[in-house]
Length: 606
Image (cartoon, rainbow, N blue to C red; front, side, top):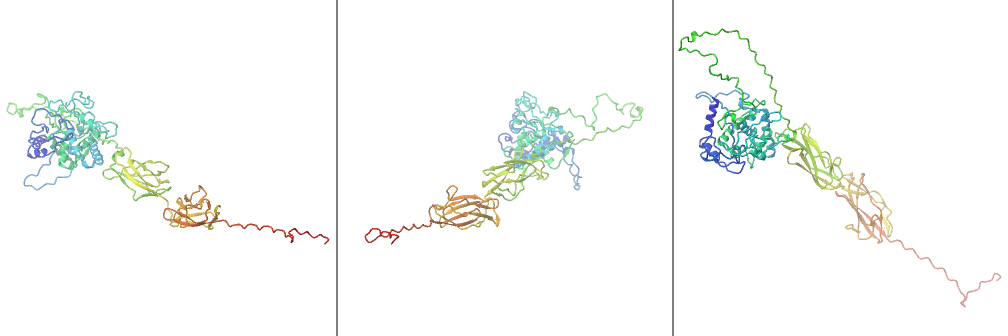
């Protein structure tokens, strides 16, 4: 009855003006888009764009080459009888058709999460992948996959040889589909090899792009549906995406039926226990598309068909010796049959997802500007949180921090890169940053190791150390005579808000008497004969100036000192000429007589 109802619903869903108008409104484009459908489109499963020709479609522009698919529709709720009040149905776990095998469900949800983080504008819902997976392979043949998500046997469609299907010559040398002559649709999402060559993915990070792996196939299908900047939240783009997978109006309606069914609710079932559909678009049953297991055994509730002429014959009441004359065979006591002991089904162990693949974004945790003065440590450090699509933190993610820029800022230990693993709160903080001697701005970028995502960037700045006050420490006035050296030492203290300021660059200039510009003559610093020096305060905030030569020009000068932050002080310098020394007095000349000749010395006797 359910199969009969499904066929009736399918026939109704693929005919009528509403469906024709909806599909005819879709715009044509290149693969993986679709070509416009014919306006009548009443031919059931006729390929869209095939027209009325008897020639099979080429399969170009579709993921599956327009291969056959399952046409069974989801079950419907029984409507209320006329004249009776609405009945509230009891809440149950869900019908068997709503169950999706655990690994298959995980693959769909992981693909949605990954694509929403890289292509958020597509708005891919995992229920769309589930709808396509149901129609293409019955959810990987009821979830018959191994622990890594690979089907136990290959799911391969019929040869696309033009005999009722597209005609596609082999493109993979039989690598995926085992057919060296023609291509066949392969895997749980039924990609033809040529399409897989373009869209194949390695979503489970095993180093292989395998169309028979549900994780790889679901990721590839999601990206294929999102191609050409589609926004699947828009009905027109959603229809185009589905029709690009298989260009059939019945296919579109069947997938949409399952999509809406799964959106209303679903639940997880163990791998290998999913319900397998039966009806096929090629009307030749499921044997035309090999499944990864042996043919299904009869349902326990369906008695096996006996060959004719076997078993106990039914009596004919119209003949002599009717029912009253039938001799019943003697009955023996039937021993009680012990029900078979079924071992409990262990829930499937989903493959381990690397923490990096779970990350949807890196959120900035540290706030406020990252600043430091030269040769000091930053008080804050770049910090991020690794979050999944739902905003939950992810533990064990490796975050790489990298410094880029022209400053000489480094992490502790002198490195420009550092890798940190997120903790239980999903947070990773970079090591302490320490500024060097160069001022300026630089960037610290945070990225997820092993995950292709845009970096989260932090801007940091290094500024000069500052002092708002400079003062000379003791000492006599600076004075010297020309040609000599100032005998007084000069020591200056730098402070910032009353606290000693180490590491501050102080500029000392010997200026003219007005103190406005460097002097063109007069005193110079002994080291190098220059009149401008830049000195750095020591750990006590002090600088000591070298000796100062007075020069050869007497006059008044100013020693002016300045520091970043506004600190300044001026010290007067006096250079004088040396004091003149008086010449010595000449010796007196000896006296002479009137005759002009020297007088004779009186003799001792006189």
